[in-house]
Image (tube, rainbow, N blue to C red):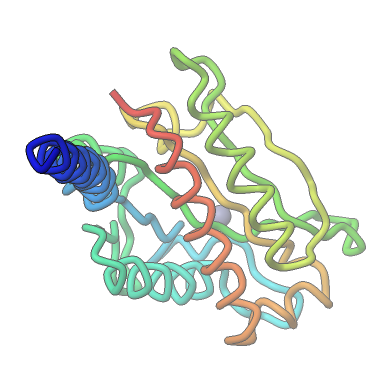
Length: 222
Ligand SMILES: [Zn+2]
């Protein structure tokens, strides 16, 4: 009788040990992939002699791109991601070189940050995400759609869709999933005003971080 009870206790202990072992392995695996040491590239569009578009009230796109990119960089670093900015100051960086930086570092994803503009129609506003359309397994358009959904949800901006672009160097020369976030229209007075505030820039940044985390959680790489 005592022997049988002892056997039951041992069995329970063994089961508990197995359960914790499996559980621990699972959480280690999960942690291992989240803190993957592969780098995220943040690419502030334009810079130096290339100002990008000029906003309604005269601000340069290149400066707003850099502000948002630096905030995004800081946030991702604080979350223990490895991140590289393709420029940290107001300098000209060739688009081919931006792609090279990403390829040489075998980056996990490439996120380019740009402002939009529409000549002759200052009522257009909203967010677009551009991607390279013809890459195997269509991860690019999935990443673009995830990012757009998070940005629209997080900022309340209009959904201007994801757009396949084969002609853009930073998209067609990069070897990893790559997108361009067009965070809003600087040709639209309201959107420009919002984009010049810290609180709206933070919403853009938080949305991109949420998009990245969701994309990473799908574990589609390799
Ligand atoms: Zn631009």
